[in-house]
Image 1 (cartoon, rainbow, N blue to C red):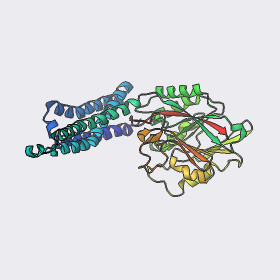
Image 2 (image 1 turned 180 degrees about the vertical axis):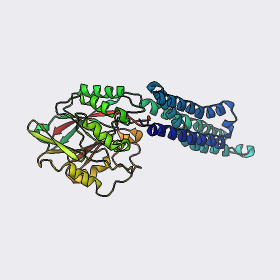
Image 3 (image 1 turned 180 degrees about the horizontal axis):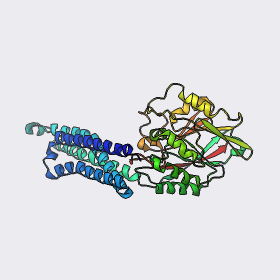
Length: 400
């Protein structure tokens, strides 16, 4: 990783630790002055950012000495402190409101004697207890979100029926690998584990839908290792936004030196039992906002220009926002990633889906006869996942 790219996450982490720690300490002192009188509370409050900066030092030492164990320890500890700061910043205002209500509900003694004093006291006790539970529960959720990133990616079996599926493609198994983000938080050993899981599933085809590696020094090696899967119908890849961030020319060179084809605004016909699956790879708009008008139309049309009319058309697009366009242009199936499920999910859907500009953040979607699966990804660039674990989709095509 270049010096600039190594330093950037460290600078961002310093800023985040400073801002989140400053905010929660201010809120604690302002909204919970009685808590702040306790020496232990003050000590812990200042120990949190202190721990973060110690972890940052370990991260720096590991980065400049190539000590991956120290990098993992320092970076994970740093993120843990940031998550604690965010959790407290979000929960302390709610907790403070409950605390304030409990204080204001204390009435003069002569008034209390005329009302149900026990009921009033019970309400105040409940509010005081709740004001403690809220930040504790938020911290526990934050801790669980970090722990979930340490788990092995799970296999997610998905069967997708298509009425007009060519007979020769019935029962075909496709493994999707996306958003591994090899770099700071995910290593080559993790990629090896992911590939081992895929190998056990014996897919017919492996599709890699972008953001595979964030460390250009490891990109070619990651592709070489991935090529060893050697499924019967091959492995194909498309790009994501991080391929552009890391340097698209270097990424293309890494693919050119490896046997995995990169489908960038182009496609490939795959024959199985006398039927044709045509796989296209869409370009990525690079920016995080709404892509330029017509971007997806042009990319899909270029990717699919050689597709036989009777083929089953599968589009790899890192961005799930492509789905309405891919449906309109006749794609049967679209496979996407990018969103990481919004980092937080419940019951197989992103918790941010209803407020995000992106409408297809995690899971299976359908428009007419066209279908989309957006994976939460097999890795992470930010080690926090709550209710949307890392996954490796194994998609089986069914006729009917």
